[in-house]
Length: 426
Image 1 (cartoon, rainbow, N blue to C red):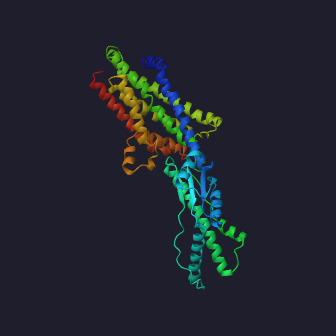
Image 2: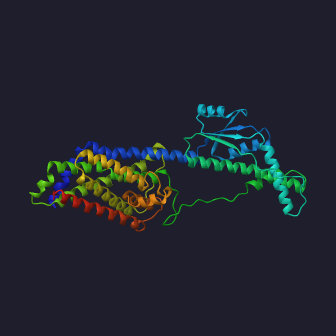
Image 3: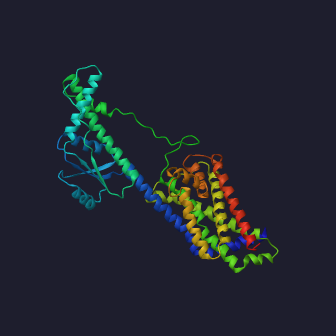
């Protein structure tokens, strides 16, 4: 036990002297978690709270064009600004560049005429199906001329589809309003009362949004719940920059060879490094989670809500940290120089994070990439954390994700042993 303690003290002193390694393990993930959470939270706010600026060029001077603009305003996701009706495509593009607006909608000149004609046609068909006499002179007028949506190419497809869905809802509201008016007038020969019209059009069923949880009720997750666990895992695996270099340094200096001449075992040295750096990964989690809980609200970001099972959170952090440390030692054993260890380590961590779902959610990946994601230990680490943070689960609910992490860690340990034997270091 004394030998192990002495080795741990030595590894701690080596770690403290490694200023760059400490910066990479603590400062970099702290900056990452702040930046990424702020960006994602800004995106959520833009969609859910802030209004997206949109220019409207209304070439239709009649009633339906104005109704469409009112309907777009009532959606709540757009901040509407009007353009003169005589704008051409080039002028619209210049206006978007000068105002930094990402979207412009052009309402065609015959919009009201087409909407009214289509409404009368639809009302006539409805009356005929009811067995009532309809206007026999009404012919099929075709579809309403489409709106034109100009958008900046930097606008992401997901947001553009949301915008398109909102515009289609506004367009459908205008068409439904005109159809109701036409149908009511055909039956009663008088205009549809405004109060009844609003009541009929606003009578929509509500939607209750309830996040699925494993244990009872769960508050809606925010950007911090998604990003803090993900980038904590990234920070854990970045111990490779310090630990991998430490292993390489000891190989080059002959420390492993000298251990053979001493009354001790190589297992003591490896166990010391694992204990030391697992403690570092736990400290990383404590620091980053603490920032999420107490500092995020002070800078306008949503606060991190810890799961109810704190012991489960500690166990998951411990297992994930051990996996990160096992991987770092394995890379350090096979690397011949510091450059190889740092270069391969940094690149491999980014790749594992990408295919593991830290950068792009795995549910958006195709089938082949989802299969590859199962190879990444970060994928299972992330699923374990999400099971606690996002699904309200307890330790027993994430055991299925911890088992692959432990198996992958044991594989890294076995490969490390084979590497040490092959290099005659033990």
